[in-house]
Amino acid sequence: MEYVSRAAGPPLDGLVDDLYYLEGDPPYSRLLLPAAPAPLLIVNLGSPFLIRAGTDVAAVQYTDGCAVTTPTRAWEFGYPTPTRSVGVHFKPWGLAPFLPMPAADLCDRPATVEQIWDRPATAELRHRLALADGPYEMLTLLEAELVRRRRTINGLDIVRQMSSAIAETGGAVPISDLGVAARASSTYLAQRFKEVIGVTPKRLARSYRFTATVLAINVAAPIDWGDVAARAGYFDQAHFVHEFREFTGLTPTRYVEVRQRFLREHPDHVLAEWPLPAD
Image 1 (cartoon, rainbow, N blue to C red):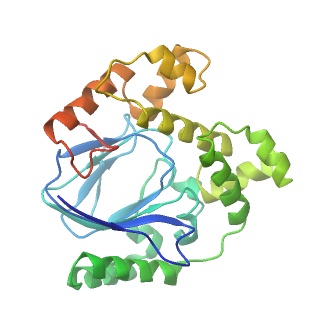
Image 2: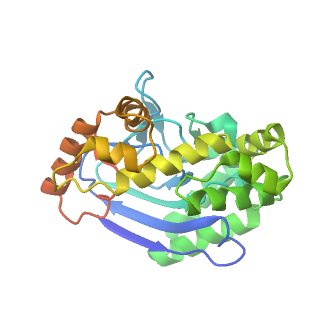
């Protein structure tokens, strides 16, 4: 697969981690994405793809693309073969200025691009992207569209400041301490976070803590799960296993097996860092 990524410039650099272009044959037709503090926008330029947001729901077809706020559980992404799209990896608070609804409305319920930007505008954007001369021009067009659509969000600054502090500690900072420092009530902060990010500060901290824990696991070496849980700050291994299943849809042992499969079958693949085979 071809994967091209670049950072966004001002005024988007405080909202966006990167813009990317993806084209080619996916390593697996279905990928499982563990829950992570990373909202996502995809503008699809190929055949429709499928999303299953949770283990107890049916897969839904997305033709024009999708917007995904911070998820609370693993979700499944079904790629067409071949696939072609451009997208944006946002900071936790970064997608909100481009949504017509509170981020909480999309929590574990991905929207189509049409639902957030209307059908004519989405069709026009996809048309211009399809005619662009290569990935870099496409990403420039997408960035310009985001700049044009960016709007002011109430409470964005305080959410960004607190979320940054949560991220810097890997989710270990006491949320009550952040609230005191911000001179804001827990109720106010929870409301602002749900509107901007889709989840409460405590839930965001859990997501950061779990993501940092999982990415630090070396699946090529023996793993002491009790030690992993203790170093991550979990009270006991049972609590850790419960949270592991909630965020990945897998037990820790099964996660290692699936991760090892991906690395064995597709070493150094552009998608190998986070998604898991769901086939």
